[in-house]
Image (cartoon, rainbow, N blue to C red):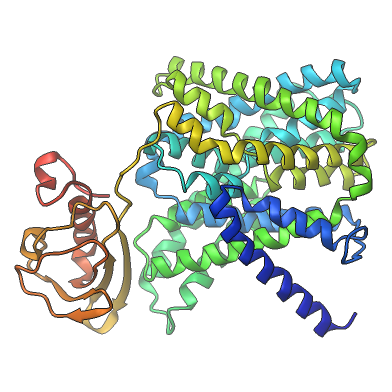
Length: 501
């Protein structure tokens, strides 16, 4: 086929994938299932007839796509929402991973007749929750901020240790890895990745705040480039690129950057494109003719993973959290965390690592994981809202966070803030003078129902209003904090101790 045919086919696939998002949103299904089905239809045994069986290329492209998805996750995660959840999430992403791998390997080895290396590989591949699946499903659920923060942060942190473990098991000819040496290598790689992320994130934020780029569209590109500086820099230093990119983008996404909302929008678009390409590619890579023979062992493995290994990892992690005095996980949250450990592209991509390394039986492992992801994502994803309601965890009616976009006015040493008042905000009904903004700050324009007007101090704000606020660069952070505080607690926010963030 010529280039134009490939371009036409690719564009048609992307348009079909975008259209399917509407269907997935209405049904509550993760979009990854539709994308995988599109890949199967385009594959050699489907309507497209595309032949693709290069596991190594799929691995390389998959890891790059996962880095983009993780970058979007970091950029769109509100640090003030997940800050209190990070200790628990880190325990789940380390201790929880170790427990999950061990329990699943010990369960499937005797039941399925696997050797210990294959059993531990299967456990390691399936241990990580998927950031794309978690973000797409859970961000539609009105969960308590701490619980949602644990799930989001866990999905961002747990890719790194699982990749390291799968790599180690794939290159070792036998299961003779020294446990102390492996733990030391893992800690070293995670430490290097975290250090690189902590270096790139603040340095990038500092530079972007002080360099006036000639076009607003350059800021999102620069942020994504910084994410890959962190990823590749950590990899070159033999560290965890995934941890580096997540930490760096978490810092960048919560820094006071120019055109921050536009940057997040660009990152979301790039992540959607990465997801579409990744899942479709993995669907093409799978051979439907080989899947029926592994359905039974895959279902057995999936049941053990969801009902035994994941709950055990959550239970042990909760005990560690309590032992280390990092907080507590009530039993209702433990049940939800156990069921909400969604798998997606990450396990399928990780399954290509032993396949490309030539590990015996690795193609069968890939097929097992493919079936597990489809079946159990189909089972778990749509039932999460119901489970949240049954457990009394649904936080209906909670106000969405205030979205503030900033554009620098360099010559005036000022910033122009664009503020949208979201549904549920307690800024509704507040008069402009009651915002109590600094004296060198002014609300210059209100856009309501498509019509704009210059407000007076007594203009009453309503849900859906968009405000243009001009403030000095020095007061920008104070203004943003005050606006967020009023949005959450109303005009008496200060009396309630709410200071914004």
